[in-house]
Length: 371
Image 1 (spheres, one colour):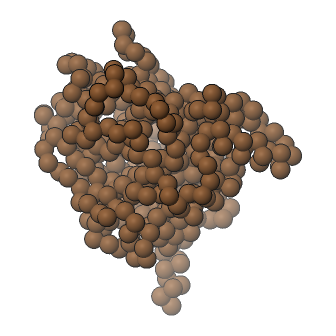
Image 2: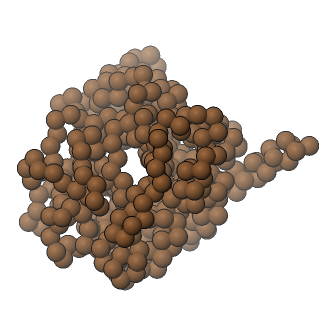
Image 3: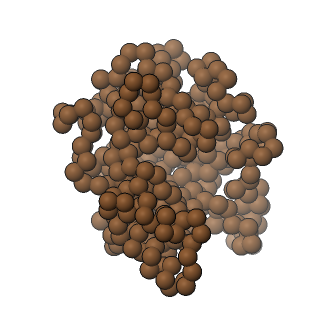
């Protein structure tokens, strides 16, 4: 099953792929080429049925303990504390993140077996330029496992109940990786990742949701961008196309004056854009994001250069990893140049991708193949 992305006014829906994403040559199919190849997000459904292991927080904590016993050592700063956060109440902790490859190698292998579009998403995929890295200097692209508690606040996700005049929600100093601070006079805000843009393409797989967790404000139906939130939905994503992201970068200094000391709001964003701010951007500049309600078993592909933000609605477990698609190298190069302009010591100034080395190695491999 595949459906083209919707671009009707006021809503944009990402293209979807089903079982066909696991077929040979799926990466060269019309839907994938017309969407992801053009710098637009894609959702692949069905990965949950292909996972063999239990991805619940309790199972992850038990697997971490077994791994530590096998290795004969305790992880510092993330062992017992990390497990207790993940397994608290046999549910998701407030926010826990760990390296899947080292902390949960069996789950890491389980994920790699289940992923679609292997030419792009496999670490050694022929169309994943990250596979051409120097063995001594691998890029830091994950995968990472993230457990979030989630929460509900209509002002963040853009339901019809959003109050007028809602402003951007300011984040803590860590920027796009920390939960938002509670707004004055409101219930605690959900786990959010503020507006940001990445040099690499990224996959986000939602592998587990805690059952029985209801949204706040009663049990009535809630819609976001014309899409009804279902029990299996655990996160709301707003994703701007690569073209709109460049326009957004020009607009943000006016929307959030003085918010980023580094001068780069998309590399150092302190805010999650509220529903009211998103509506204002569409009304005044014609810039509107794709809205994705991520469900259990979905894999979301976000192209390099696409600004995005996410609000987690329910306790869930997800996995994120980076890859480098040839189609988006120009965006990666542009962002790499911008990153170098960040102040010395800035947390995002380090070159974790090594794009120039990847391109050189890929070019050499292509030349050898043509000989």
